[in-house]
Length: 280
Ligand SMILES: NC(=O)c1ccc[n+]([C@@H]2O[C@H](COP(=O)([O-])OP(=O)(O)OC[C@H]3O[C@@H](n4cnc5c(N)ncnc54)[C@H](OP(=O)(O)O)[C@@H]3O)[C@@H](O)[C@H]2O)c1
Image (cartoon, rainbow, N blue to C red; front, side, top):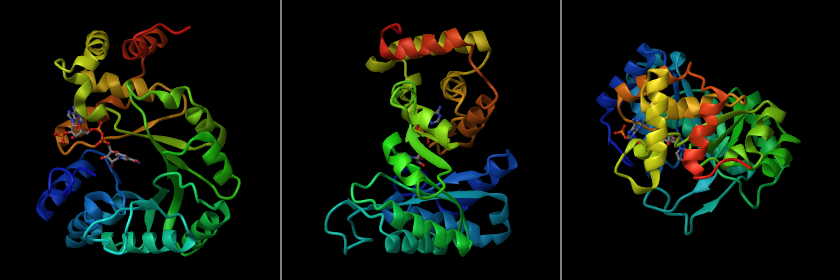
């Protein structure tokens, strides 16, 4: 989301350098959505893949559909809206395949719950795309348990990508993570580092988070971001962090966090720092 015109504005050479640096360091999964960069980022990333098609087999492409944005690349859209019709899902997957220059997507997600979502239509689209080998796995994003339950009765859901971080912790209490465990869904956490704000000591809202994170970083002999990510990874649902950085060193930092698990009381110390109160 942040590599294209919504962020670092990478050139094709910069995309290629980042992709290769990731692969060399064992980071192989790249998160996209059709709308990123106002419908431009998938194709830019694909431009780098097309330069060396042998790269494709080494990486996993995640992308999403279902949000219809307005703007110069979609002049036919008169209002921002959601579309989870069978036709739209299939057309979106095919467009993403074209953008990336590939014949399959590893993971295809519905970006947001749609009030007009018809689960049987979504299931038909998913079934067709899977039968044709165009998608290998299907999932959702930003779905609450009741929305996931409805769709899970019609089709296999393997991922739910939701915002989860120390300061956006509702997934721990609103049933989202329990629902993932119930259905065997892998939770993906977007904005796991709050855009870098939790380690900004001057930020008025996050001072107590930063202070506790620092204490834990010393105790575990690691960095602040590693602790913030370890806080997510300690949950038994197996949360996977989706990091938005444009810097390879920060990705490597995140990778170092993958194996850290916090002790129970340390986990609650960070929760308390974020909420400002002890648990009941
Ligand atoms: N499913 C959804 O609805 C949804 C919504 C939003 C995002 N997403 C996905 O989730 C990804 C992550 O979200 P995000 O980009 O908002 O989250 P994030 O990883 O919490 O934040 C990344 C931003 O924080 C900055 N940052 C500062 N210090 C950092 C550090 N130490 N480590 C990492 N980043 C640091 C990065 O700048 P630098 O580039 O300078 O490091 C970047 O601008 C997105 O890129 C997108 O793929 C999904």
